Each structure stands twice: as C-alpha cells, then as structure tokens.
Length: 307
Image 1 (spheres, one colour):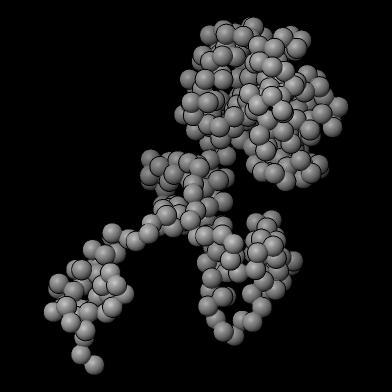
Image 2: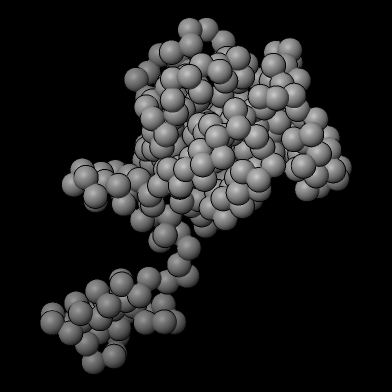
C-alpha cells in the first residue's frame, strides 16, 4: 500500500520507517529539506497513485487545520486523510466536513508510543466510518504492536472518537506519572530507605504497580541519579486540560487527573500568590507567624515570635 506522510518529526519519522519495514511505500513530506522525501506537499500528492491515503502528523491546532485545508485542495474524490496528531476531538467534525465536501474521507487516529514506537509498535485509537477504517487497516496493522489486534488497536467509534479516546488516555497518563512521582519523593524523604532506585526497580516485576511508565522512571534515575540535571518545571501539551474540561462537562469527578494537572501549574511558579494570601490571612485572623520575603519567621507585629 502507498501512504503519504506529512510531518517527519520524532514520531513521524519513526512511523515512516516502521510502515516501510512492513513492506508499504511511504512518501514523506516535511518542510525541512534534510528529512523530506519531496520538496512540497503538492509533490507528495503527485507521487501517490489514486485513490490516495495521506497521514497528517503535525502539531495540533492551526498547523493541522492548515495542512488539512491544503490537502482538501490538492486531493481528489475517493482519497482519504488520517489526522494522527494530538488534535482536540472537537476539530475532527469540521475537518471531516471540509474534506467530505470534496468527496475525501477522514479518519482521526490517536497514537501512543512516543519515541519507543519504532521498536515496540504504537497503540492506536481511531474514529471514522467502517469502510474508511477497513481501507487503512494495512497501515494500522503495520504500526500497532505485534500480537492480537485488539491489544493495540481499537476502532473506538465515528469521527472524533479516536482523538477523544487519546485525550482520556493522556489524562490517565498524567495521574499515573504523578502518583509515581509522589511515591518517589516519599521514598526519598524516609531515612530508612537507603536505595530508592533499587526499591522502584524491585516494583517493576511481579507487583501490582508494575508498568512501562515505572520502567521508564527507573531508567531515568539510572541515567540521572537524584534527578540533579533537570528542574521540577513541568509543561503540559493540552490533553490533560481537555480531559479535565470534559470531566466538568460530564460531571465526572476526575480528582486524580485534575490534581496532577494543577501540580504541573504549580511547578511553574516561582512563588504561590494563593499561598501568600493564605499565610497573610492566618496572620490576620489568628496572629500566626509568617515567613517574610527574606526567609525570616515573624509574628503579628513584624517582630520575631517569642520563644
């Protein structure tokens, strides 16, 4: 099968390799001359025989919307586009309509696996019609992990379902990672634990908390003991926020995912205005000591507390 692949970043380039290793022809386009197979998006389309299939793997939002709008002008009726990036599911119906008005099919595909997907395969969650999904199944089979299809691939529902499933997947990921992080910090805080990395490593086999994320945490500690080379500043790419927004919309109490997201917000603050307000209020109503901007503990009068 032929496939056009737009976007040859860390994941896109590895996906191109994995699909080609399965015996398919992949024509990749990327604006960077050192990685692209063709000079332009139009040239990529021109290299493909009809009916064409094009996989879009670019950042979510405007880059994806712009690429799909360009493809709507370049492709022909009977062609099909897969958005494999982390687009918000609410973008899928407009994208599908834009392409559908030109007789072009659309599939949204949530892809999980990161930089390890080349060797391990990618978990795939797709949304679209039965016919469109069946047509792309050779590509999905090339990308997913080996073994039973249902263990690494799901046709989750109509257009939008794939990205919705991936959004929730990433929200769950936030909670899992933060739980491991809290466990790591608690182990570090207890003097009885003299081998933190070894303790975490012992959890990787046989225990109920074993997982690939835990394997990666142990690997990270082996590469950087104590995490001395990185800061605690933690970004978020959007899916966690969207998950919390959906939890609010559906009145689902997503306590863990919400707390994990807010912890990332806190990691980016040099100081907390909210906690400054709390400290000031405790001082106002109860005369409790506070710590000033110089790190000195002061009482209600501004002098060091007695005793």
